[in-house]
Image (cartoon, rainbow, N blue to C red; front, top):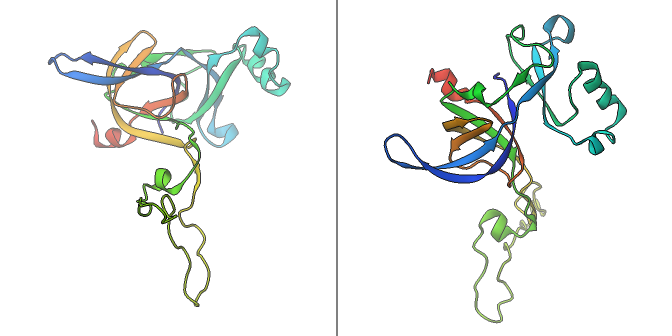
Length: 215
């Protein structure tokens, strides 16, 4: 596994690359992440890093649960809203309290970005599954329905797990192999779209598939 940084989606823009091509990018603000805890195989059974990102204001930090606040106080780290753990092999290169910023991806050509998709609420089957619906003529009474789902006498029931009207969006989704266009300060520009709304939390790591291919 690769080290995963905590970022915040700020929106989309477009820039020109060195060849003069217009590239549509997503802007991710990657404020310095702080190493909160180091997991070691001898103690915890695996090697990993806990990173904390998006610092809280003093008023919100005062309302943090005491066990969680105690973890930040022990590490002498400013209380943050998001804590994320990554399993990595080499943890000796890091120490508690160390800051890791967007320059971590300066030499990384492709990244995977994970985020929470926009919630659409309860939706019907036409929007949710792109079903065609019924005739649009007057009087049919069958416009935006999904049609029959029943069975014959055997087995005489509807199988569970079928497509039905239900909640749409609000799911964790990963977009793979996004090209890193530029790293400017705490801003990371990646080609293409990433899941979530503006100001949504995203998690960025080096692309696993590209890494295996040596790209």
